[in-house]
Every structure is written in C-alpha cells, then in structure tokens.
Image 1 (spheres, rainbow, N blue to C red):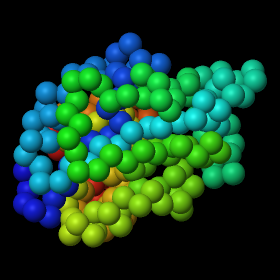
Image 2: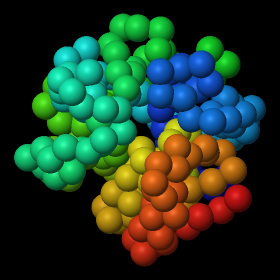
Image 3: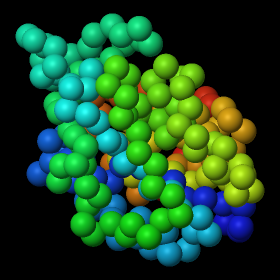
Length: 201
C-alpha cells in the first residue's frame, strides 16, 4: 500500500448490494477478506454508504407503472430506476456484517430525495459536492485506491470524479464486483481508462 498521502475508498459494501439483498451484486460478499486486509494497510480509509429516503426518486416503485432497471429523464440527465434499496435505517442499508467499519470517515450519499448519487464526490448532477474532496485535501491525500460495489456504477463514477479532481486514482478490479447492466461494465471500464484511472487486478 502507498505512503501517507494515500487513502483507500471503500464503496457501498452494504447488505442490499450483497447476495440476498434488494439490489444484490453477484459475488458482492466475495471481496470482503481482501477489502478488510487493504483497510489494515491503508493510512486513511473512507467508507461510503448509500443512504436513501424511502420516497427516493431513483426507486422504480415511486414511479407508477415503471419497471425496475428502466430509464427515465430527470433534470440532471438519464436515471436508471432501481428496486428500492439502502433505505435509511434499514438492515439493507447497514454495512455487511463482515466488513471492517473502523474507518477514518463514513460518508453517506443519496440522501436527497430528488437526485441520485453514485459518486462519492458529487451527486448525479455532477455539481452538488459531497465534501469528500475537501476532506481528503485537508488530510493531505493525493492518491486514492477504490474498491467495493458496484464496479460499473458507484465505483466507476467515484474513480472518474477523483481523477478529474486531480487525485492519482486506481481501481482494484479484483476487490470489486459489477452489476453489468446492458453492457455497463465495458462502458465503465472504457470511461475510467479515458479519465486516466489505473485499473489493476
């Protein structure tokens, strides 16, 4: 693991994204031993947590007649409609019980009803900041490693934003799992590489 200017960002390893959850990522729990080991080595660790109100605009059930995984137009762009997941205060929103939670920071995202938040840095309008970049800069962090769920959505969006913000950024693909919705994994990998994100096993 890199030196004191490095942080490990662990994205959304929550019950609803693991097998048995409302929006399960296949094999999502398989990454836990490696992620926990990486947390032991990292000088700074951040956990992100999807934290939606029950009436969140990204939930298909809040759009009568809409099917999960369909898309609608929102003021900030196209929005995939998801099964309800990671609702504030529910077991599904809790971190997986095997995940280490002794992090330096736990960042909750997606709590604004009208806008989704894949990235750890910005809401999906790419403008409304979460405050994570400022926190990392105040800590003197310049290098970031990303792991977690799901590789082709929240991990990829976070890594791309990190690279755009000037952080040296890598994703450990072996410590992630993907949803791969309609080719989303190949698209996300291409976008990360184009943004200058390093992809490593």
